[in-house]
Image (cartoon, rainbow, N blue to C red; front, side, top):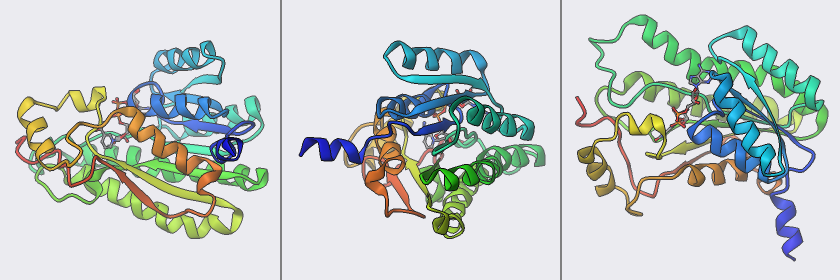
Length: 264
Ligand SMILES: NC(=O)c1ccc[n+]([C@@H]2O[C@H](COP(=O)([O-])OP(=O)(O)OC[C@H]3O[C@@H](n4cnc5c(N)ncnc54)[C@H](O)[C@@H]3O)[C@@H](O)[C@H]2O)c1
């Protein structure tokens, strides 16, 4: 019986690509997918961070390959997919994790058009482009699952978060629509929307005051850990969720955590 449960989460023989896998949530995703048996392409803007994470996985007996990839660079995205296919033969799981912005720092009168274009390029256009590149391989292999890391911000309404929040809302809706395009090809697309999760990105904006304010609206009374988010990503990546597509799962301790309110 335990074997049947293990099979539902088994990714042995599957190939996963994680963007922004060198730190934080992406690192946690790379590690849990490798622990489930996947061969993981750990990609990050920082080649060094990707290498450290891949080395850590290999040291624990897993299979991982590091690669530098700036998701803003279309050539890097093509190179990431080509390298993955050359190394492992296909792509079965894509975690679109690399994302930037938010933190209550988007006063509409202090940011410029370049900022907005950059956030949308990283948070929306890169995930779309990677889907376009990997889904044909997923379809051919007979197993495909895309998991986008969105955010509680995608449904929250608060000051100084308009660009990040709307980009993550776009990502939610992109998945819900792509689920129709890719479903007939046997490929699923889902989102995990973290609440405040302890990473370097969060620590750069988390003041004691903000933490207290967020926990007041968090029934489970703690900030999230990377492992909380990685578990949800494994659910969507693995066969256990074989009939789940186009969904967004918020992993946030319950309630409504907001990031930006009051940081102005
Ligand atoms: N931490 C949170 O509280 C939280 C909450 C909601 C959503 N998220 C989302 O989770 C994802 C990961 O966030 P995190 O907190 O782990 O961040 P993080 O800063 O801890 O790690 C992000 C990683 O992405 C890499 N990266 C940055 N720009 C990149 C680029 N252009 N191309 C490739 N890699 C790049 C960085 O080098 C870093 O290794 C993001 O999409 C973020 O929006 C985080």
